[in-house]
Amino acid sequence: MSKLIGVLMGSDSDYKYVEKALKILSAYNIAFDVSVISAHRDTESALEYAKYAKQNGLKVIIAFAGMAAHLAGVVAANTTLPVIGVPLDRTGFGGQDALLSTVQMPPGIPVATVGVDAGANAAWLAIRILALLDKTIQEKLDEEKDLMKKKLIEKTKKVREMWNNE
Image (cartoon, rainbow, N blue to C red; front, side, top):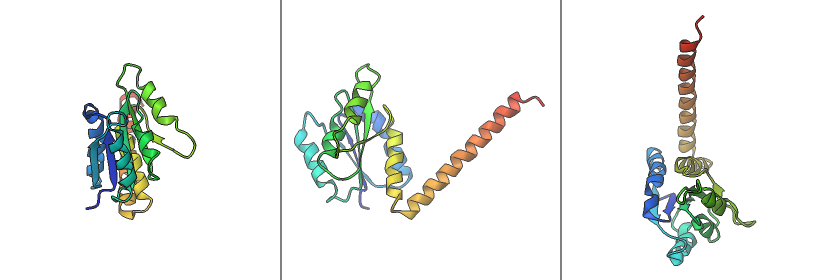
């Protein structure tokens, strides 16, 4: 099976955030490549990964990084594939430093950025991108959305039963 999504983390200490995304991709049977690549400690590997990502069959790249958080930007600057940045709270600033490093990109080098520590949402966004050209993935997303709605209706019903003494 061809790997469609590249998942990068700047450090193996980021794994606990990455794992959530990998579980979601696995639930959708989407093949992914996962690597630890630092934009600062091994710039050459980051550049090479980005340069050959499309040739290697990838369709989307998710990049997790904290602190200076340049991984997503470095990758986006060296590929035309969609790159999703996941800023991580690694310094005690609530992840704001990483968020700004990830989201503030020059024109023509976009990084789609999700919330701080929001690896799950990065996976969902990557899946939605793939669903644009894959009917099976789109159908599964539609089913998932319907299930979310049904769960919410059930929760509303339970709350109303508790508090609506009519």
